[in-house]
Image (cartoon, rainbow, N blue to C red; front, top):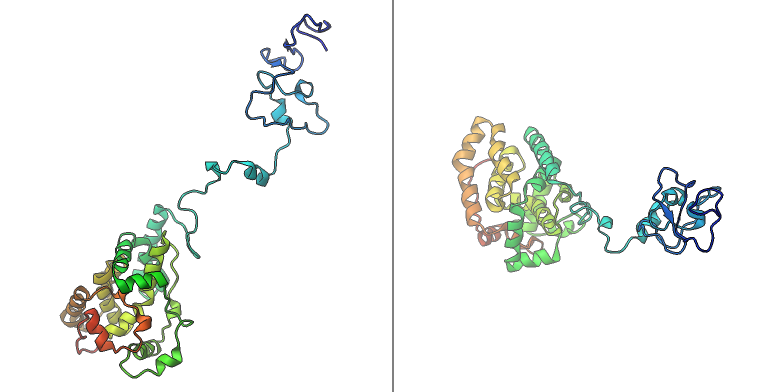
Length: 329
C-alpha cells in the first residue's frame, strides 16, 4: 500500500491513516478513504453489500470515509421490487395509494372530477338521444348527484322507517322476492299490483344497474335504493313505461329527490311527445305530478318489502300522493 507521498512511497506508522488515492479516482482529488469510520452517506444501508461477481469493490472492500466515490452504488446488487417495498417503514407515505383511487365497495370505479364531468356529458347526450338507454341514465344519475344524494341520505337518517331501511339495506331483486306469494295477493294490494306492472310492461327488477361511480358507500346505496323503487313509483302513480308515463314519473321524482338526472328527463322528455300527449301532459298530468311530489313524504322512507299486503290506495294516502287523473296515458 502506498501513502499520500505518491506512487512508490511506503506508508509508515508516522504518516496519518487518512490519505489520498491518486489512482482510484484521478479526476476527484478531494475524495478520501477512512478505514475506521463508516460511510456517512445515508444511501448506503448497513451492513455493507457484497460487490458484483468479477468486480473489485471500491476502497479495497471498505466503504468510503468522508465522501463516496460512487463505485459502491454502481456495483451493489438491486433488491427485488417486492422486497424493497416490504422493507419500507409502515408509516411511509410512498406506500399509500392516491386518495380517491381506492375502491370503496364492490364494483366501485374511482374517478376524478374531470372524469365525472366527461362521463356526465357523454351519458347526458346518449340519454337524450335514446331515453331507453338505462345504462346511460344510470351513469348520469351517479355522476351528477353529488349534491342531491347527501340530502336524501339525511332525510332517510332522520326518519324512523327510513333509518331502519338505511341500517338493514334491503334489496328488491328477483332473488329476494317471493313471486308466487305476491301473485297470490288480492287485487289492489301493493305486491299484486307491482307484479302486474312488471308482467304487463315486461320489465324486471334485476335490470337495475349497481352503482359504480359514487365515491361513498352510503350514497351508493341511496341511489341504488332509488333505482329499485322506481318501478314501485310507476305502480303507485299508475303510470306505464311509455314516454308519457316516464315523463310524468320523472316530474314526480324530480320534485321528490332533486336529482339532476330526473330534472333533465322531466325537462327534455316532452320533446318526444306528439301534440295530443303534450296537451294531456300540460293540462292534466303535469299539475297532478307536481302537486303530488310536493305534498308527498320522502318515497325512500317507505319499507315497501313490508307493505306488500297493504292496498295501493291506503299507501298513496299515507305517503300523500293524490289519486291519478282519469285520463288515458
